[in-house]
Length: 161
Length: 376
Image 1 (tube, each protein chain N blue to C red):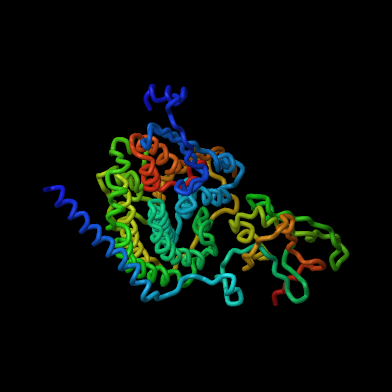
Image 2 (cartoon, each protein chain N blue to C red):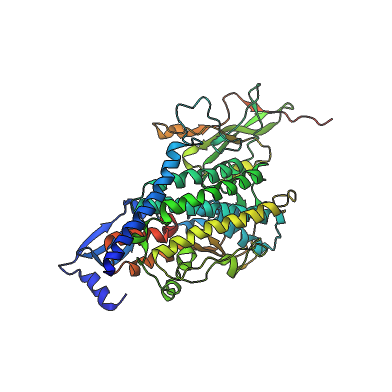
């Protein structure tokens, strides 16, 4: 007799719990409310990443093709994975003296772990985060990037008045 | 393991039927191989094989400065990355006797609790899916997205945000941080009844988890099972209560304890912990000072004085501890990480014996294992 009561009780409980679960599903089926699914890649034109988004390391250049990197190599020392290589050259300055300048700022995106130590420690704010996140390429060599544009030069320091 | 069992394992009797669960099995949540010996559907013994994602973190840390070590700890337990970072930072700060600003302590604790909610939420989604309830995955992911949006706004990354640094934080948090966190707390409180109706009260779920994988308190202590898994067996091991760090001394919250020790008790601990985290968040966000900076003054190159330093924190899965040996250089001489999942995994070989193989999946899921944290 006991087992029959328990059997019926189990069915009753099962139906109740199933009803409670289905009610949640039904609620969202009838009134979906906010739609959370992003229609990527169809929404590429309107998709905007957060201001602080860590996409890749970039070096901003101004309209005269000038950047702020002096080639001091602090970012290279601070990088834990060796994803930054700095190659410097000697160029004459205004007085005719040979001074150190950046030749190539090589950035291996494939090794970068986005720890932000290079950007944080740069004394001249020469590098910063870019917003691009579509990094898929067919060839691994394309992940090695030269950050300073060809023919670019060091921006002169503004003289404080 | 008794001597007889070990002999059996080595000799491998003819009637033993041995199958490998993993290393590519959806319910192990990573590259973990469980060598299961079966008698019919009953498990005779089970040996976990680890090391498929071993990266030598402790050795790697010996060639990194203290600031660089932080980003390695992200990659251990990636679901509670922020809490792992905090352990190293606290150890370095204690060694240098640096007092971080009050505001940093508040922000760290808020981020800890947000990570904990995100981590438990993902676990809830995946645990339902392990047991065949696919619906939970979509509901859990939807709400976890709100936490990740807060993270992305402030740190620029969603999962592995190396946001802590010895002495404070990398940046100040976003101006909208406080507002969005309060909004999330309100939002998530409304969604928790859905979780209850969908899975907690479900009869099929009760039958799959109640009385499955029972771990008594003694076993939990012997194997060093900490976190929600240990607290499900009545082992009081919440580091936030036992050895408070940061701002946790000032926060009023209760430690969740269940005494049954089965998979359902571990489930209940995590569900209650999410609610408790919301309570903590409410207290912290309203008390958080607006001003006070985000970092203490630190030297550019950190050198710890010679000695040994130890710090433990409560990560989402248990006790995470860091032990640093310094010889006075800018690199640590030796770093030992005590990761919670390593201890939590090996109790599984005891819990699985005698049960059926479908229950092994339920038990493994209820322990909430993250494999990169086991292998390091």
